[in-house]
Image (tube, rainbow, N blue to C red; front, side):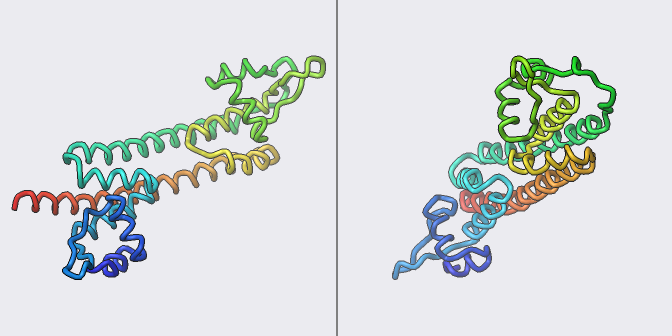
Length: 235
């Protein structure tokens, strides 16, 4: 295959294919007498594997994994792929735990509370298992905004704000980023709807599923790469 042939089948430009060869994602191509590149099945499958894996683990990690299938023993190369699957599995487990916790937290009653029920930064940090600086960061990002002690000026978290902090904590553990949380929490404070948290977690589930599917597609292409290398070694 020519460079243009590989580019067309992968959905990349010819320059992108050449860049992948330069970066070691594709093994070195053979050259014609005139200097034109000639690619084979291993190059096509390597490019397909990279494109799929980039959607699952990002371009940097994808390059590392595909290069490993050209340079390392199969066991070490497969270990990198196993690790990527394991990270997604951990994310999915955390997501399921966050879904259960967030639903339970959102339904907790906060009526008939007293001022003495409020918590300090250090008390809430200890209850959540986070650093006090984490709570201050959430305050700065407007995720959880505490009251201030009228005399000392220190932060005091009401039961409602404690519940907000617990929801943020679960969503952060599930991998939710600060920016979307910044948009979600004001709405959640206004409506107190558990559906808002459910929707946020559902979006995270869609993202994990998409990345898991990308890893599956990448693994199929890597299997073909491994097969070509084994055939070449046996010749």
